Amino acid sequence: MVANDLILDDAYMWTEDKKLSPNTEMSPEFRARKHLLFLVGTRPEAIKLAPLIKRAEADPAHWIVTVCFSGQHDELAQQVFELFRIEPQFRLKVMRAAQPLSELSSRLLEAFSPVLADVHPDAVIVQGDTTTAFVGALTAFYERIPVAHVEAGLRTNNPYAPFPEEINRRLIAQIATWHFAPTVRAMKNLLAENIPSEKIFVVGNTVIDAVREILRRAPETNTAEVLAPPDRPFVLVTHHRRESFGLPVERVFWAIEQLAQRHPEIDFLFPVHPNPNVRERAVEILGKKPNILLQPPLPYHLFVHLMAHALFLITDSGGIQEEATALGKHVLVTREITERPETVEAGLAILVGTDQQKLMIAAEQLLSSKSRLQAPISSEVTPFGDGRASERILEKLYAQLGAVEITSKADPAKSSYL
Ligand code: UDP
Image 1 (cartoon, rainbow, N blue to C red):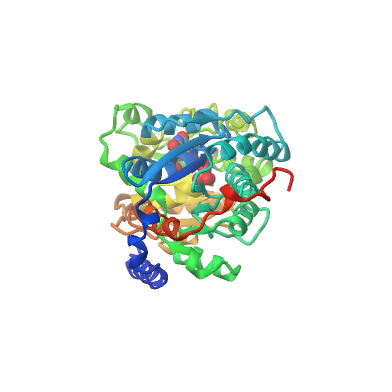
Image 2 (image 1 turned 90 degrees about the horizontal axis):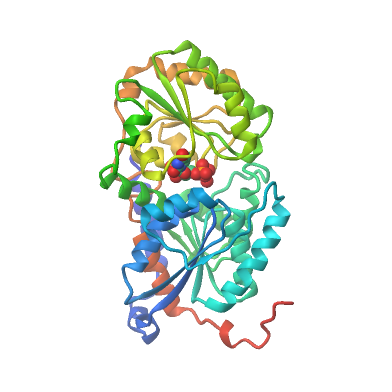
């Protein structure tokens, strides 16, 4: 892997230059406990906020932690809460079957409003680009509570890819007070949108903290081996993005079906997302091949161990592109465009889009190159950081909260009808 130490170090120097004077740390406010409200909606948010929540919870001298779960991905996120032993104080139930985004957004706004008004934390923390994150940030703005955005600055510059995430994260950037960018590229994207440089901190991505934490733990069961027999090599597949529902999904599945046909010696292990647009097509196209193993979504710890043991990964997930760098795994990205080109630059990802031929050719090339498959290329510092992002975020946020003047509680102009 292209070691990214230099770039990352530069980034830290860059932010160090901008940091508050060390004297701030002596102010009385700095010594006070700060209340953080984490808004979590989906599995990836739960995974990426878990290291931050756990670290803040472990430091009660400095932090009061409240977690609000919107319920956007109900069971998938719950698995993650159990794994990291997180017990949300608020559980909202905003999901309805086949609910359009507009309805989800208005439900979220209504549901978050009383929680934020009630808790009134020093800062609301949102992660990434989901509808929960965007509407959470918007609600915090209406309540005049400052927002910290974790994983800020990712951009494809195409409003419809990923949809609706590209616009969600742009809108969050307009609202947030603090922007925790995972990489220098993300920082530059924010600067190009005139986000003030002193509010941007390049810290790495908390997903590297999460994946390292899981790798440190021994696998809790040998279920990973049951799912993927150790004597059989396997490719790990996920595919579920909204923008490829319909024909693009089918093309990806036909490519996998063909690969499974040509390679009976290899298993294709596919935890299928519960969305019916994906699940029904997967069962229809892939369900009958003996070496395609369709599974329900897997608990995160099992999934990480499977990623670590897979020949390579086929996915349209953003988080998996990042995790691949911590595991030194090659990944074929079934998207036309990625906001994580760092994995491509590290020589680990190939963008194959949803073109059946492209996917098959790239997979065949990987399968025929034993050296590329056998030697996982991993390093301490990945393009997405070194596993200490949550530590840096809390450090920066604490200093910033000590310095920020929060006026909302006393603001007479505050009104739900503004
Ligand atoms: N993941 C998991 N179990 C699975 C499939 C994925 O725990 O069966 C994890 C994966 O390791 C990654 C995250 O879920 O951290 C990705 O979630 P998703 O693809 O829903 O979202 P995205 O990464 O595209 O935002």
